[in-house]
Image (cartoon, rainbow, N blue to C red; front, side, top):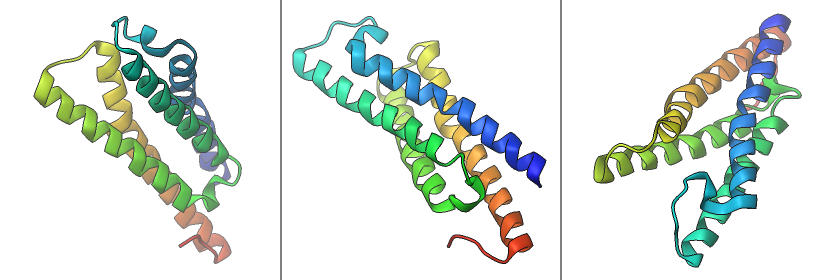
Length: 136
């Protein structure tokens, strides 16, 4: 169990680099990531959303120590990411296919993050069986 737990911790720590780094880039450089010119208001909104993405990455890092006991936090963060991914998917339906970079984001949001959440639940359940405690 300890080996799998450590592997999950390492995987989450690495995966959280993606939202944290992209979020920080968006906070610092705005829409430059997309290369599109936008209004000042759209730029402000983009930076706000980038700040949320940065915060989500940091919050995922906060689950790494004692990951087997952070089920609720992990699930809430996963829910936020999946809602964002579903919103991106809806945008794809309404406006067409975005760049490969955005398709990669969609895969992280709707595949990778839910799989990590299921893995975290597995580790948490094993921990609860072993030690008789679990987060509700």
